[in-house]
Image (cartoon, rainbow, N blue to C red):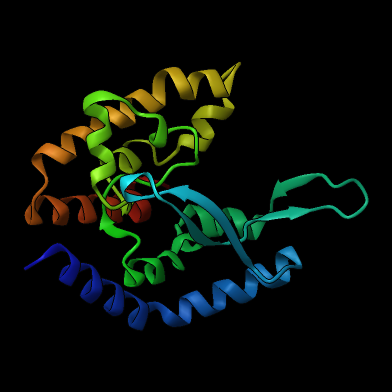
Amino acid sequence: MTKRFFDIVFSLFTLLLFFWVLLISWLLAVIDTQTNGIFTQERIGRHGVPFKIYKLRTIRTESQSDKKYISRIGQFLRRFKLDELPQFFTVLKGEMSIVGPRPDLPGYYDLLTGENRKILELKPGLTCLASIKYNKEEFLLQKQESPLVYNDSIIFPDKVRLNLAYYYHRSFWGDLVVIWNTVWVVFFRGK
């Protein structure tokens, strides 16, 4: 089975099965954030080509102070990765895969050099070994005195190492293991 065929079948099955969850989550995001409920952001894709990623909006802005914070509903959506459901449409479009390096902001993967640039030969994915390992990255960074320095010197290089290992050892069965581990982390271990 080719990876693209698997991506299409898995995405269609997931969207058909959980469309009602996506719809309810989107309505909650609309009401909660008082926006259209969709967050878009430019990320770096295959071969370093930028593309737009879509998520459900989880950040609310207080109108009086312009202070931004993750709402209670947003925390719930993030905890169970429901904010990521719109990315299955991006997989159907062919810009992402189910398993592959998570797409990052400009200024990271697009600046890789040498052997590390092999990561850019892969389509970005909804999940990967690095996203499993760093599924609590947001909380890990909050504990750091300098979150950006910690990310750039510790987390990002480790993600590159894990994604490069995936590049060399990827397989259909390996992808199934990554998917299973993602489900386990999100719904069972991540509590």
